[in-house]
Length: 144
Image (tube, rainbow, N blue to C red; front, side, top):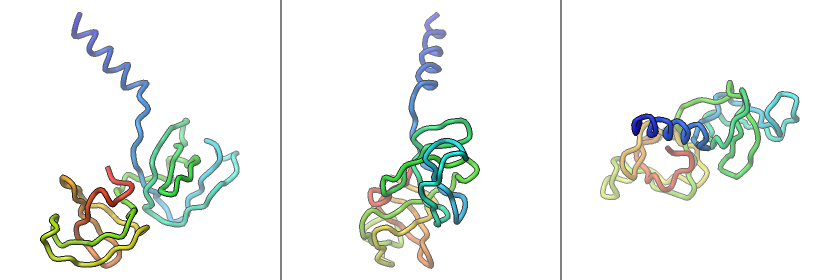
């Protein structure tokens, strides 16, 4: 009986929990709409592949998203990808290894798109343009 109650409780919580997570834009041109259908007008046209977006809600094949500038609206799921990326929320230094004592490689300005390959503890390994290295996780919007 106790096992049944625990399983029911876990299923109940998961089905009603409003889970937020990050995805990225799949294409260089993605329409953000006012509502969850192609019938709704376009609010914004994104022109940056792999831009991270926070998924806030869903309605059939559309997801309600929020971007790093707090714009929100609806995007069709075919325009979203699971690739991990982030946007720098402040100027940061890119390091060769995941420690402040390693060699600094570059200064990365606020608002730069980063492709994230992995994160460890408080650091993420990223690639941006011709540079690759480690940045502090706290300086990235869109991380896991």
